[in-house]
Image (cartoon, rainbow, N blue to C red; front, top):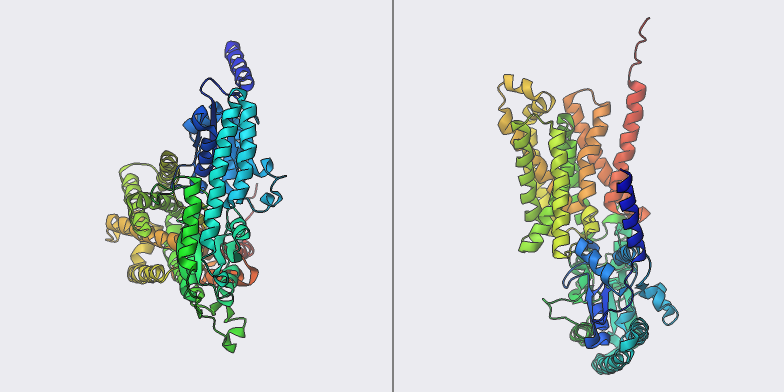
Length: 590
């Protein structure tokens, strides 16, 4: 045993002392986060080295998962380069840990003195002349790491800087053809500010200024919509990084409501084989051509839908001023009613955790739909039904309890999702948005899907409520009463799957799970009869959605999160009622 400890200590000493920083015989090996950074580094290295990025083309940084092979690349690299913001910051922290803090640079720190504004806005490379600063600094750094090839790096950098200066002149020539009054920009991120300052545009708005996770609130969405209308914005530009996010849905909903054209995509971080954007210069040229195509037109008054009726001055009606708010409210109410009703049977049966399994499984469905080019709702629904049949079958043919089978299922589904993501280098779906969606961005199609599901499932539950109650409370006893428990078992699993997926696609995975569990759990504590239990579950769900929607609007928070917290508050109130109403336990005489 002592020898094992000795071997471990020797191994740790070797690992802690070996750190490849300087160039080998084949020149420098540079690893970066984003593809455009590796392209810039490659132009400086030329044939005297090699550069590659961890994030692949056409992939989203927020879904990147570090693999052992990527860790090995970081370890073997002479230098690891990252910008240092948002989800990408985490990759840089991994690299710092792997390389023990040596041979890793954050560009926000590296260029802080040259570009002071980089602290607040990291997208400096949207100005080619600021990219020139990066190239000059990197060429000198590469020369310090590999003195034998210093002249090569400096020469390559000078040639590349010439190309960047030519790019700058070309952009100016193209932009000069856009009328000055049309040079206004509105996008999801505050990613075009450096570009705007360099070439004479005005950034009149954006959905979020933060370069990281963002959860929309109802008030914020309304404010941005009114900004679009007031500033007479004609075009809303969407960054490629937002291809599969809730933020894209938000901006497209706002644009549709205001009668404004949406344009995708502006390339900011990654590159794309699909869009034939394979280098930093390609990225800047494409962005400029898109701006030219959509802004080199006559200004048109978009005449957005901005109701001025005094009726909306009423605090009760103000959150319903716009069509997208009404759609969001109706969807939230329908989803909360549906989940509360169906969830009441899950709570009685002890299947509350099953919604968690379905929520995680739906993520796998989204990924499969993404890879196969299918509708996201269909992909999530198919996987949900697969999980339902799998859990139902395994539970009935084994002696395992339902909670065990469900726990195995949802952990395996989540593991499959991570394996898929790590294997393909990420996807253009933001998992943060999957967890908490924005109900104000619900499309008309999604709203009617939720309504249709609610009507169909609600009708079934009302018609067979007695059988479902008997089966949920006493599965074995229901057989003696002539109920075909096997059929009912699978039918209810299907209902729960459809309900969870409908809620998942509308309000996000976490609110969907909470909506199935919390209202029925609260109702269970204070109800005395089955009918009262179901009705009260429904009422608590609707009240939670209603209160959450108003709280989202007036407190400027995410609607799904506000709805959950309302349900939690009601649940705690019911706990207090249960405690005070519960008769005292009689003392046992000794």
